[in-house]
Image 1 (cartoon, rainbow, N blue to C red):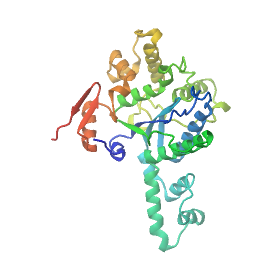
Image 2 (cartoon, one colour; image 1 turned 90 degrees about the horizontal axis):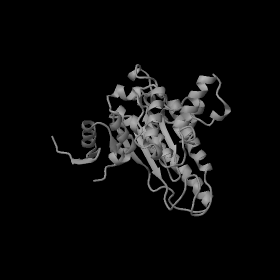
Image 3 (cartoon, one colour; image 1 turned 45 degrees about the vertical axis):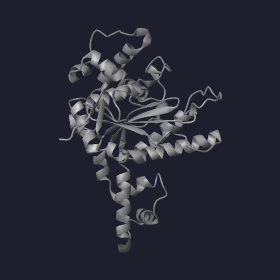
Length: 335
C-alpha cells in the first residue's frame, strides 16, 4: 500500500531524511548526453546554487548532496527549533524571497503594523508560511520547479522533467544517517565518474574536504568557495544534542569514508585497512557489517532506515503493513 509523503516525513520522530529525484525522457541533468551529444555540465551549478539559496531561506539543513548525470541526492535535516523561533517579520521576509506574497503581508513588512481588521488574515498567512519553511516537500518543490523550467527552456520542449516529486527515506538513528551520507558522498566513486573524493565535483564531500583544508592552511577562504553554502557541521560526539550538528568529528568521518571508498573499489576489492576508524568502534559496528551496510544502502532499505524496532514503530505510525530492512521484508502485526 502506498503511504502518503506527509506520513513518511515526521519531524517529531526524526529530523533527518534522504531525498532523491531522477529525470525522465532520457533527460540529463548534467554531464555529457550520449543521445544528442550535448554537454549539460553547467546544470550542476544550477542545482547547487538553488540549494544554497533554499538552505538560507528554509529551516532545513543540508547534511550531504551529490549531483549525478540524471539524478541527485540530498540528506536533509528539518530544524524545527529554528522554525518555531521565527518572528512574523522573519517568516514574511523569507517567504518573499521565493514568492510575491500577499499584499497584506507585504504592507506589514513595509510599515511594521497592520489594521486590526487584517490581523487575522496576517496571522493565518504567517502560520501557513512558517509551516512551509520547515517542509521538505516545499523545499523540493522550489528546487525542482526552477530546474525543470530552466532545463525545458534550454531543451526547447515542454512536459515533465522529473519522474515524480521526489522519493524520501526517513533516517531514524545515527547509523542510518552516517551510512546514508556515506552512500551519497560515494556516488561518483561507485559510478566510476571520478577516482577520488577530492575530484568528486558538486558533492558535499568535496566541499567539506576543501573547507577543511582551507581552515587548516588559512583563516581566509578562497574566492572559489563563494558558491558554497553552509552544510550542517560535524560537531563531535562530546557535544551530543547540545549543539546543532552531526555528533561526530569530521576527521573521523573523513577517515571512514576514505576507508570505505577504498574497500569497495573494484581494483582494490577486499582490501581492509589494518585499523578500523574510530567512528566504527564508537558505534560498536564491525568493519564487514559497515561495509555491506554502506555499499548496499538503497537495496537494503525503502522509505525508512534505522534499527529494526524503530523502523517497525515508524511504519506502524505511518499506517503501513510491511516493513523492509536489510535483506528481509516482514508484515507488521497489530499490538
